[in-house]
Length: 363
Image (tube, rainbow, N blue to C red; front, side, top):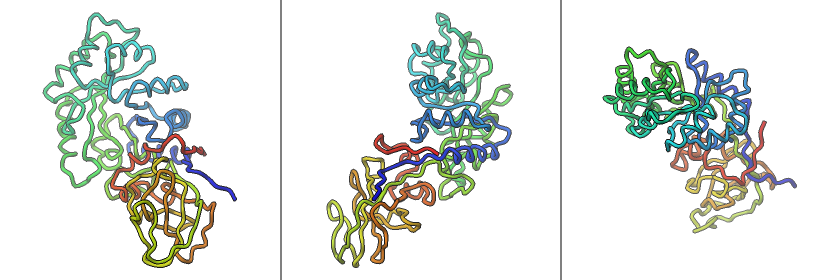
């Protein structure tokens, strides 16, 4: 008997294929690959090195915070890196310059720090100026654009080639008129400016060609998950397949209960399987009864509450499944997006929530 504990299989060939698909969607754009949150749970350094060495390499990486960027530099990653939240303290600016890191500017404090005439950096920084076109999260107000842009252009601490950017908030929904309004506003704000521009996230890449500009910023679709609502993209492949093993099977009589709180009972005689995975591994605690699990080529439903270390599935009265058989929780053959729907969450959260005790297998 061989039992496999919870294991996330990372398929770097799928990652390379997905990158090629992204580039085919926007062939005239440079690619900033988003690696924040441990590369969406896939391994920050691992994914960066795979993308950096691929013959179809990316043009830059995007991370949320400086510690992620420094981890990549420490791992030998030389590709340009952009801090997508910008710097948090003016004391970080010298560190950005020494490590050749680029920064987004989205508020007055960042602008003031870069334009401080007392600040002399070892080299000027490449800046991405972020404009809020309607998402109302990060970004300067459109009426402030000229002030920010001219101030940055005049600063000795800023490279001359500033990238102009915004972020799409509703691009995953083709019926939502907000995206077209955002693109139109961005075009008006930046009209006549000789600068590279960037707006498209994964959903923008997939569905809004007018948002591609000179730079695209794919995240979720690089990892093989469709960014669009209620749509799967069969041109991309999941990079992560989460699996574990059956560690027990037992007969269950009609009317008997399973799991904490007796939240599910069998309506007929059946066989229950126990899979060695739970919320302690990152499997969603709120996955509902009926959430599919793939075992021996067929889907079987989750039954009962998710425990810290185990879930239970209804294998059916005629089950021939045995201890040691592999259970796929999401990935190849079972889209993570579908599991997210059953757990009333989003694929991003499931991928990012994989915990340290999950084994990693890279191919």
